[in-house]
Each structure stands twice: as structure tokens, then as C-alpha cells.
Amino acid sequence: MKIPHITIFTTEACAFCVRAKRLLAAKGVDYEETYLPRADIDSRRRLVELTGRYTFPQILIDETPIGGFDELKALDDAGRLDLMIGMA
Image 1 (tube, rainbow, N blue to C red):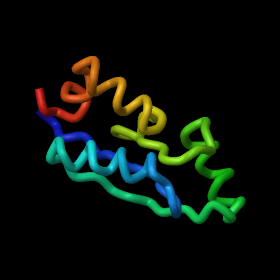
Image 2 (tube, rainbow, N blue to C red; image 1 turned 180 degrees about the horizontal axis):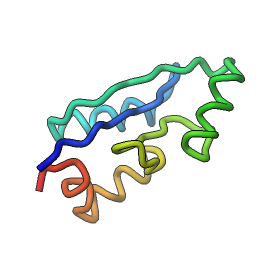
Image 3 (cartoon, helix red, strand yellow; image 1 turned 45 degrees about the vertical axis):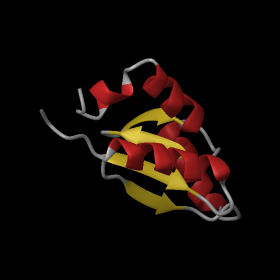
């Protein structure tokens, strides 16, 4: 099974970013973290273009936006995250 590429967009002082990274680390999967300063308007615009959202974190699995921590946790709770990240 192909291991997906996971990207997480984070920013400073973001508790939900920390939670998302902890959940992914607990799953033992590698991910690419891209830090975007909150005040960088151009980066935020690109984030919206890429994910459809401007809040942090934003998580992509194989370039498919899945949302933030709440959506990541919901996928995990439903047992669907393991399938998406090749752990099932």
C-alpha cells in the first residue's frame, strides 16, 4: 500500500496545531510541517486557495484537504484515518 504524503500547515501559538501533530505522531506517520506566520497575508491567501480555509492547522493527505484538528480527530474516531494514512 502506498504511504500518503501528509502536509500540515501550522502557525505560532496554536494549540490545535500541537494536537494535530501529536495525533499524527501517535500514529507513527511522517508528515511535512509548513509554518505560516499569522500576519503573512499572502501566505494566508495561498492557504485559502489550497485548502479553502484560512484557520490553523490545515491538513492535506495526498494533496486532498481534510480540514483542521477537529476533522482529523473525527476521522480517527470513526476509524477512517487509519485507512487514509495506510495504517489499516
